[in-house]
Image (cartoon, rainbow, N blue to C red):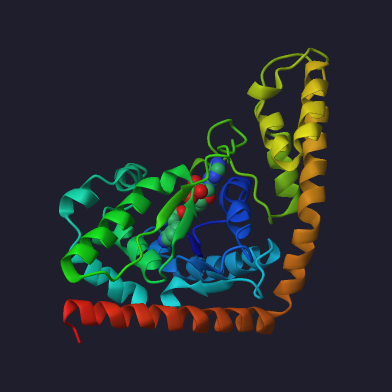
Length: 320
Ligand code: ADP
Ligand code: TRP
């Protein structure tokens, strides 16, 4: 079994990314025969055209991964742009990708509506994503619901390529993380950097405190009973707790825990959970050679697999 997951370096990591994507993905390390984690920096170019910013985000996300529990003994970490086979395979897949398939992509339309430029790159985003996956013969690609359609497109392209040129690609299984709830932001909508409602995981402590203290609440009085399930503070706090502890906290809300106290408890839970990670991240900031070495090894291992697949593709298509 080969597991693969990718993350765009497109902004400061927040609780939604952490609980919705990074943590569940990192749990595959060591269980699968091989696990690939890559930073989709070529994808990020569809929305970030500021070289200074992209450079910073690339640096940050590697530290985020390492501090959040990526284990170089168990898994492979690399930048998409360090393996040229991604773009080579993308072109070949683009030549068999039906326009109609891409035109149905919901995320393209959503991104254009949000103001991202409607470029050929953004339109072809799912083809690059298919290349990211098929290059490594990944059987399992765990993603959130928002990526389901992209994964289905990857399967369609693999099947079409195999039927056109002969068996070449492993058709990957999609694993949707149904168990991971959508993490609400401080305003109650889905937490997302595009809504400005995030709680970062590695940011300045003052910013985090302000974000937590600013979570929306209803107008219930301090000692009134509260409904935990409709309360954003509780829904975020629950992510840090075992089922038994979450139930106990819910009872306190029903007994009239004040929103101010509830937020202080959440802040404490946040700090307890992330303190060791933040400490580790600081430590890693002072060890650039170690970080470079992890990346160098990861890139080397990924490159071997990618080159083998491309040889198969070149032979199958007649490019060799
Ligand atoms: P953003 O919405 O902040 O731009 P991304 O779309 O870059 O975040 O998120 C990367 C991944 O993190 C997504 O594919 C999704 O799986 C996960 N994710 C992001 N926000 C949330 C959330 N609020 N709840 C659960 N998972 C999330
Ligand atoms: N599109 C994914 C996201 O925005 C990131 C990504 C790029 C990815 N290539 C991938 C995820 C391949 C899984 C597999 O979250």
